[in-house]
Length: 279
Image (cartoon, rainbow, N blue to C red; front, side, top):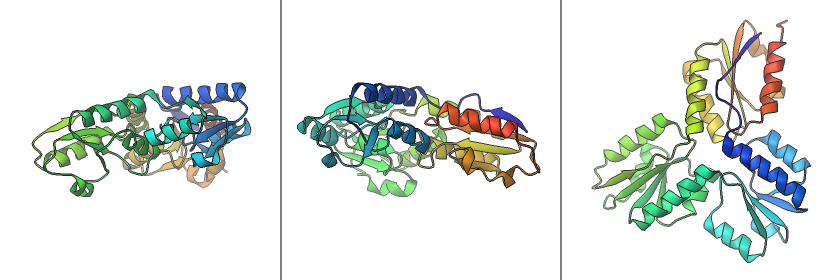
């Protein structure tokens, strides 16, 4: 089978830096804990677990050792709690997430009600919300009822959202008639480049595969965008999840991957696809 790979896909610089930092920390320290999955990819999380990284959901469960702050960041309260317990902190937060946290604090200090466009349950969003006061999260136009019409608004966005959704939500907010709106584009350029490359590729192939964790926001967004342009789009974590029946009658496949998908997962998938021969 002929296979085309998106021009931009796989590990982004922020994720690669977090993984490298985790691996270095595991060689330097005996007891290393990640507060939540360091990235949203089960293959990579399992590899690091085998190397000694323990993933926990609560700081209360850690008595001693090193706490690795995952790429999505942590709230100020969580960081304070870690310090109060005398634990060592190694910060693997993506620099772009740190930027969003800083912008949120600045907007709040300037008197804006901070509005973040994104998924309220996503760890990045939780970390940003927990970095300042007086902040609202909106994911759909229906959420705009949360906002105070008498306030001036400072609008930011989850880094992994699509530009189209960001634009649509900003337009919906502006129609509410606020006296002042300050909009700062906090979208990740790496994410946008991956989305553009994926949509371009999926239009050229018979079947499209989006590789990455099922909980990964940026990977899910890639799959959603590709599905709009090619109904034969499948979101899989790795080759083992592939139902080979979907290859029947297909001559050309496209492959892309989320920002937290390891290179070896992509390479294995492409290699197996290229050697696949329909029965």
